[in-house]
Image 1 (cartoon, rainbow, N blue to C red):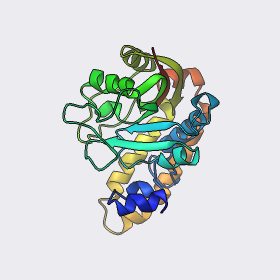
Image 2 (cartoon, rainbow, N blue to C red):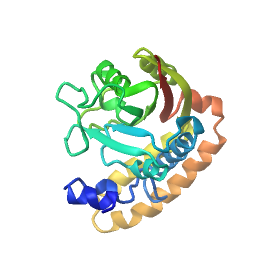
Image 3 (spheres, helix red, strand yellow):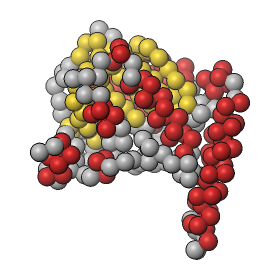
Image 4 (spheres, rainbow, N blue to C red):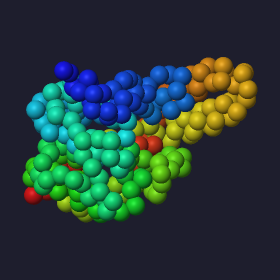
Length: 247
């Protein structure tokens, strides 16, 4: 029995077993540019030979719908998810700690989770505890974004602030990537606002939504390409950081 069938037979959620709009976004999605650029950066980082994903043990800490699971599986890694709902392989206890052994994983992934975590010290210390001594933390979170509680939303970061926050808990930064600059993310926000409005208009609104989103996404793509890299580096919508566990 294949891995997908085993998960289905075990009664695990099926959302992560299909294409996910975060991993494979379409241009008619209002947040297409952000999802597209995040996917591009993450794929690039996962292709780094230093990570040695083939045979690696991966923990997706706060995995949600497991949008990037397939990428790890395709690389030959052994992926496990952890989330508070208890429907995944690893349980997150009520106190925020992981139900796993010390040094059990080669890489801990954290995708768009950190802004929803109140006790950052516990979260990052648990990520470090779960890693082997020279393991990796691959983390993405928002520099700038709209309020989105799932179930809560506490903070945003600068690149410098994110680096110092994570390094204070026993990691060192190997690489930081800035995703979508300020010209483009203002347009993405307008696209999200337009989508919210159009969904309230009976019949005609939902029909107009894809065309409006595509037009605004093209505009945002152009804006992002004309924004200097040094501007985006300090004013990004999303930061993706690759950190190594300090011994």
